Length: 157
Length: 433
Image 1 (tube, each protein chain N blue to C red):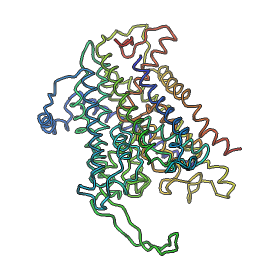
Image 2 (spheres, rainbow over the protein chains, first blue to last red; image 1 turned 120 degrees about the horizontal axis):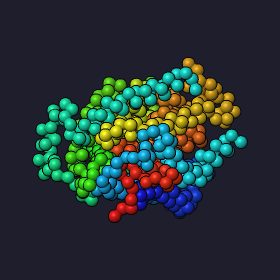
Image 3 (tube, rainbow over the protein chains, first blue to last red; image 1 turned 60 degrees about the vertical axis):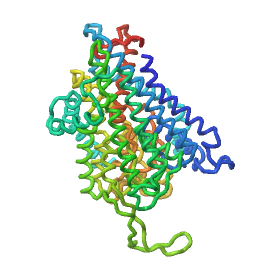
Image 4 (spheres, rainbow over the protein chains, first blue to last red; image 1 turned 90 degrees about the vertical axis):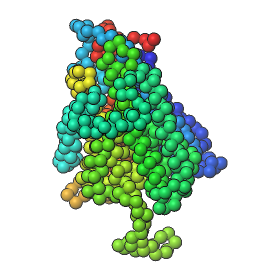
């Protein structure tokens, strides 16, 4: 369970930490916000710029690789932080997963009985979806509220 | 949305689901070493590779040895990609004489391709030589995908085995993934893409006269444009199949040489979800209860489809700002309607939204439209699909191992709620010793 929790928490921490770091440091914000920086990274001011940074690190921190475009990311700050985020999320997940594999292999199988929760029926499918969505929503709704959600409200007002 | 939009989404889902069982069964047989035809035909190559690299096929590894092999192999791969980029000016197959890539960009790209992310801070046609693309990036497309599949198979074995101290052999799982699954599929897809007009050559970039001469910002007449070339098809096939997503050209699958026709678009977007979906069946087959695999696939699909429909309807609805400007947002036979900003006219709204949802549900990351130009909620969909941890289909192998970890957590939570012993597929979860 400890390893399983690690697998789920590492990408969340990587995404939120890197996004936060990018929007509070001059190197992440770029020279439209701080004239001392040599390059431009966030071209779009306000919520859309934040969405672009959040998207970039959601993408790198989960090994996706797509971009929201619009963000100038080919500079030392994004290349280095993003590179580290990608490596963390990939390999620090792979090792706990293999640890789980090793721990499971070492166990004996218990016979399923009346006390066993079946894992192939609609109830379990619903349970699994619930866990995935709740973990994702609890972690990211606050960040999404600052980006696309507020952008939507500005658009329709 | 129009009737045709619904038909396209349904057709897409139908083809993916029709392929899940045959491909899933095939992969289960490959990993268990059951003869399927292809693996008997190419067995001499497999055995030859083991002999060449001193691998003993039947020697099993503990999880620590397996993890060490996976990490070491990926670190070496990453260093190779870094070195190739830094030294590309010295090597052949560089008709545009592109210079060394900067150290920070090389690091980012090496980390990106080794980790199956394929985040690209660079533009392919102005940065990478053909050799770097082929030997560095494309090789990693195969290897990072195979690494994910190998780790998944090790986890499945962990579930299946009893009182065992080993979980398989990393080198054997890697070799079989590449040789029998990724290479044959990529070969077929690459040829299909070439038939649609995806480029595959070693030519230098070609200048062609414009149909209509234009003027640049300074008022000079521009009579011609330069078209990038290169061995693109072979890279694009595996970039989709291996959920890599790194484009040969800067604008990825929106580029007409990467994705020229609606048919090439369909083939590529199918390739994105093909292996991640089929691996669910492989999992069920390998643990001896295919219902378990179908249940996982059902959970993935039930998250994917509503989010896809949210993106598609938001994009088709357009924005009030476009309406204020007098843009006709109605879909008709002559136009796609909705928010077409950042989308290709040859794909339209629904194929762009379908791609955006598929590419972020699977950890692919190739794009055929610009996600930044989506409506706010349309853009939220791909972002949220990634934030769910890339477990809704997810990367090849990595998506399913992530989802299986979620299944273990779900069983644990259910166990807490109803007071049962948390166990998944007969394995009780206890603290790790």
